[in-house]
Length: 355
Image (tube, rainbow, N blue to C red; front, top):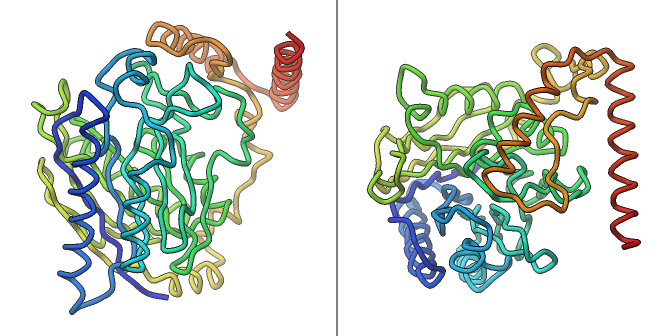
């Protein structure tokens, strides 16, 4: 099972209204068709990935404004265009993110990407770790979603594909959970800005993409935003989209800098599966001593629950998380705190339903 993947970066100006999304979708569909056709004499490109905020960015600072101007339901008519193209070409597209207005909550916006394939929608991923305090999107963690559903992995004919968005990748737990959920290819849909982008001296973009690939023995397809600062103020966007193999080798990378760019590289699922089966050394998933890490059982950053998510609220919750993170944890304390939080949440939910 060997094919090529394409990490595609876009360079749109930031839309102010959802009526502008359609033109972006048309351009991205054209980029898929051009890439597919251009490389066809050499190899089959079967997986395409686009950046975070490719459809719309949170240019408004409150949830009501985002819902009024930019948020859309998911799935939607734009997803239908991607699905039609996937069916036509026999490919998979990890879309850029939408600002999603869920039907079950009128006070929430999610940052959402969809894996589209020839057979339909294969997975929907909502960003678990918004870039706080500025992003006022809700995390599934904020609304009490089942943790078992937060990091979906789609079993497809081109391998098991998972996704996490931008800031998610600074949490090793996110991609580790994808790996334990079966991911062989992890797609990073990202809008990673300077100075943490794709150039020295920091180059966090490259650092984390390579580390997450190596520590989980999986391919990484990372599409980064390539917009000019004038289009997405106040940040500049360094691009540098890349594809990394399961040992952390960079297989292809776009030159840093803004602009539309496409990089392609081979994804060898057969080699990955053989490596995972053969390897006894450096198998960090199998060597993981979960009982040694008590912090994973201790609540740190509090979910928003029913409170409105805004910048001030994010800052208050950050302070709560900072206080919790400073407390030394013992196994018993961590277990008791986790149990107390679970009990409190269950009581709050029951109280809310009863009201």
